[in-house]
Length: 460
RNA sequence: GGCGCGGUGGGAGAGUGGUUAUCCAGCAGACUGCAAAUCUGUGUACGCCGGUUCGAGUCCGGCCCGCGCCUCCA
Image (cartoon, rainbow, N blue to C red; front, side):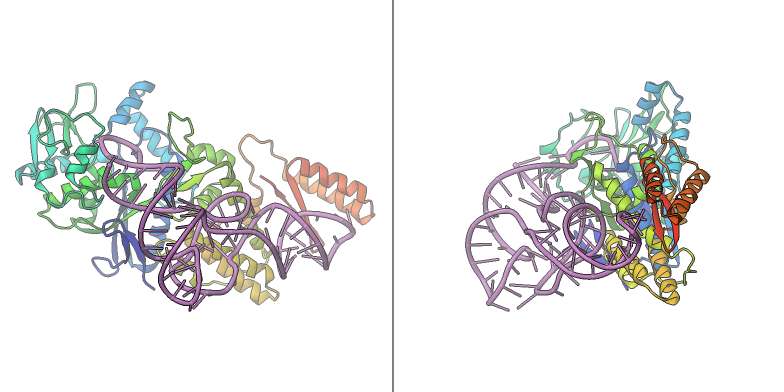
């Protein structure tokens, strides 16, 4: 089976072949650590987590690099606003990011470089660009001269004239050409800065990714991922910097971009006030539910997050875990990832189709009659879930999860009431039995009488 | 203005020429003391108008609507 990916560079699906056989280098633009991660930050992390897991299954050596941007004017602004030291803010935010992504079941990348640890390499790359005539110093800034790169605009499908015509932002007077972008800018004493041949300053936005991807994956590498909105200018400029610094050698070979996420059909933004942080969602639902919801739309499609999104994801996972729970005492037989699931994922990460196949596997498990059939079906469902980073927890734990802030009912108390109800049922006192069941239901505890045994779950 | 994306049944969301997507919700049945869960069956769809074709949600053209990007937002 071949992996097919939609390559933004060519605007079509292409069979993925790594530069070196069995070895894949994979770079994803990570977060700027100035605030808690919101669900828009979570989408690329989860999409590329699925890709990472898939690559690991098909290639012997995969190197996944995802950076942490810890120098940025938004960070400076947030620190000033909160009266917090910049180092504290980035440390705290990075840690929160790690916790949140772990809660969503995302594997950590192999390498997580920080921009501030690579300043020297950035300075070296900028110096090289100046030396090769692709950058110039003006008014304390170093700017990349877009006109020196004939191919500029290929990724985003833009040409310089259009860029200038559409420019919304005032053009800095020191630029030779309005499309030129900053590689290095001067820092006032109160904000972070590093010594450089052009004075104390800080890097522009794009140079860090060019530097860090090059440092860990080489000048030319396989896959570069990120959100759609990064295509221009960020990724376009990364290409310009890297190609020009590396004498025209190709940069990333496959560009993979995830679509945007809207909240109630609107763009998520602070001014609308509809920014949903991962942390908030984790109060309402398990990380796995958020993950499932996120994967239920194809990664290139826009994902509309509404009040229904989590509810529906929960219902679907309930069904899957119900099937596993009912086969709880059946040992699962080790199985390969079912063909339908893997084929869907290999086809440009078609997670909705994979999720649909998951539902089919759950039905098969529900319908299995013999122990052998059940063990087989259970093994397949678990293997399929693992491929997507789902279904790995104990079904009992899944059904006993409580949202934050809700008063938990003690498990032994629930068991005690169930025993009382059983006693009443035995005595055919159904009125009392139903009273107990209704009382529990009012507290969110749903009972199921299965095969002479009563089990419970929290409606969540 | 330029470039690009999308409009599928009550809801979510697949499907790129002919065959049930799937799941939730609804309805009916089986099971159950009654439920729940599960199983079985079932209704509702392809923005609009043309065209190509034996046949189009699926290809082509036009139109309407929504959305994204166009210098630092994933």
